[in-house]
Image (cartoon, rainbow, N blue to C red; front, side, top):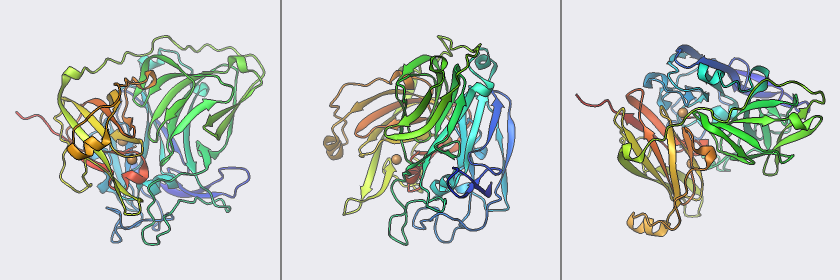
Length: 455
Ligand code: C2O
Ligand code: CU
Ligand code: CU
């Protein structure tokens, strides 16, 4: 982890950033399923932070070193000591060597800082990168690869006129935390509004939303559809034709776009009114030997009957008297309260996320992959008074584009979102949290324990 400067746009002076080696996103790590690897994550950052630390947040008190970091690989199935527990941060001059067994299906994972109380700032400064897992089964599908498989890491930032990153503050000098951070500059792979020369043929784009708080609704300006082939944790059973991709912070989508009929066109990747990037399609015909098979990889449904326990977990917002958001809590609990989620290793549970807030929260569990069962609207007043769930709408099954393996799920406002999770791999202490980084840094994160079965 280094500090460096990077030109994000022709017309802007170089921007100070933190990243891996000298890049943000950092180098992409490519791994094969079942082949472990070791990474030494070296903190070579300067001693002073350049983002507004809020010392009121748990873990970021004034007696803590300003610059601290710890790396977590989002979506990786790893032993707890290599998962990057938020309190195990270390300071410049130190490092940690982590073991990634990669005993999991091919997927686009990503590594990022996870230091308690400042991870929103460290990630905003640039501390993230991609980690791709592949295997033979996926290779045999003959999807577009090599130069035709392109990761697109999308995130928003604010820049000052001198080209420097600007992180929003509350206006209260000794309490700068804001409940959400949005930028109006759209970045792809570290560049501001870039273009990509493409050939008129199929491409595989692996999208990650690495924003602190922005949700994207990606579409193509020519009305062309995406073929979505995968979710956070790997391939879907079959491609899904989709016009708009809804991607929350932390989520990934894997898509194929066919530019064959678009020779000579310029196509924008858009999100609502934002232009994200441009594809410039070449004029010359090319041959394309890649395929988009009609079936990809089976995703066996985890049956509800296999769950040994259902946990009902409310998501609650604490507001100040003037209505300002103070913090959001999982299960009404703060980070340092006793562990409440303690599933047994090799068992399956259903988690019912009862979102009583006005926000959609992308909820992420470390270690595991899971499936979305359904979502359903409920009466929040009855819930507040009695803690009973009175449903006011029909059960909404997963959309076809999220009916695969997930590790981050949108818990929609005023809905109950039910996921089914098998806790596999390792016993030990992990975390689960909202992936809106401003929420995560302010108590919307909880430790959880995977408990080894007795006997
Ligand atoms: Cu992207 Cu706790 O993770
Ligand atoms: Cu994670
Ligand atoms: Cu949240």
